[in-house]
Picture 1 (cartoon, rainbow over the protein chains, first blue to last red):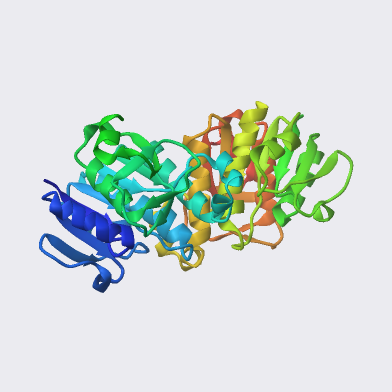
Picture 2: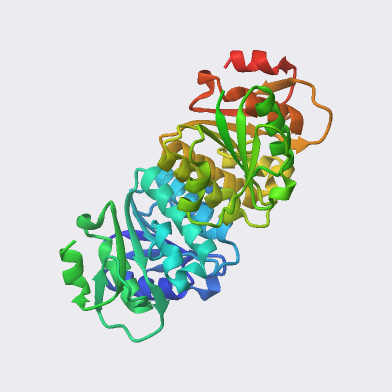
Length: 213
Length: 213
């Protein structure tokens, strides 16, 4: 059981993630600019999170938590201050709070820029890829957090399959619910710490795929 | 004497820098998207540099050079692909070419985000600061280049004074010509390697200030 802070708590991934985390017995503190869009329920506390704010304001919100998720995204509208540097602030805040566990929702090939030109869907979101590249690199190289970075293919609202394939590949979609399940399931697994997990829709049950890491 | 590659070779800083480098006996390869805006003269070769291009195209342009300057800037129009990731590509290209020396034109307090809100002029360019923050951090933490990072205050077109003050401070301007002189003068100085030099208009002759580092 953990008390989990979620940055970007009102999005599609966050909503499914929060349900999974509560179901697994965790307390959730969900932060978003518009708290009215955060799912409500038992074991869920909604807080106003402004990623443009100084780090100490974010520290204040995270105090008492034992893990942090970053699932915020500006949909291309504010990449530098939200997706890239907003993420960095939540890492810095986690470290200032003494929180070790940090789970990042990133994007396929965010750390392999040489791949971006090979897939039109990635080439079309080069600015987004760059923002995620810098956020992921900061997490790996400039923090001492116990991170797991999840890099799914393009998110879809299709029905979940409960199955995934980890690693690089040309399949280019991932259902939101499957991604949210992986995000929730890595939390208590020490074998996911320090790992970058690329994923997409696939053929292996999520538990099995995580066991095999 | 060095053969120096300049990324962003058509700008105001670059034009003054190129003159200084040639005067000091160096060969210059100046790269810019619009080569017609690069100053022409003996010991200056203008090449078309597209920072959106893959790293290997930049490698091709840099081959045979012994040092790289990054003085490109998109004036807020393309911060992710030019100021931030364009810079990273030139670092990666330098390393692929076996070039060790790399000199970055950055911006005051680029590595101290906690200062940005304290100065309105910096708060107004938060996106730019973030782009420079990531570029500087990548250079320091993710390359093995012999870097010098110059972080001047706001650039002005006033007459140069030949004098500067290094370090943090509230004076918030720097003449372009003085900055270009510092950029040129650090090239052969081993005592500037691995250093981040914050600077502004000041009272110490440039040579003396560099000797005192």
